[in-house]
Image 1 (cartoon, rainbow, N blue to C red):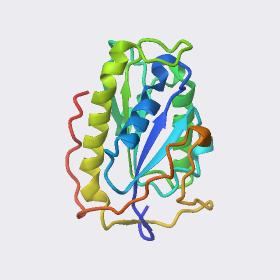
Image 2 (cartoon, rainbow, N blue to C red):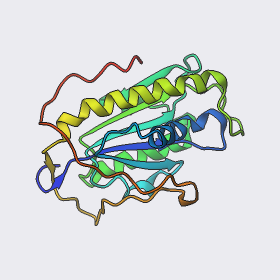
Image 3 (cartoon, rainbow, N blue to C red):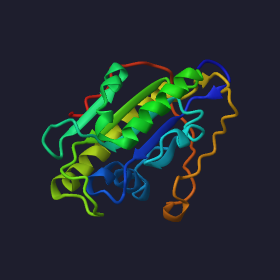
Length: 207
């Protein structure tokens, strides 16, 4: 990505709302949106369990933050962070939508349209059985996940402001529709970016 399209931060929530703790990413995204805690300039995408169907919805995003339940075998409720080469080690065999996300990133790379930076913040689930209520330990971790997401987004803001990316091929459009209009929280938030260009050490999210 170089010249043409303003860089933009995207916040993508993944997870199955009918599978207990698997919904933690989606529920955290909705909490951040409903509480108006997100800075201006962030595009919100409810990805749920969609994979390649999100191809055109992430078009134009240069810095992508993903929220999801991630089973790495640690204690339930533990926050985990994947970035850079660590994303190659996602436990995709344990999650259909993580597999879909991995496929999505691979296709975007092939199209030379991948985000400049991708970070996945997750919570270790206790249960992914059928159900619509998070387990207490995961519910308690939801606020930590939200705080870590805000910290990452605020870290990116100076990098995004004033920069531009290359025009996207493949007919990408920048307006995003949520994956489930019936449960939509309103129009996607598209806002102005902030300060200057600068790169700094990734923030410590406590993972």
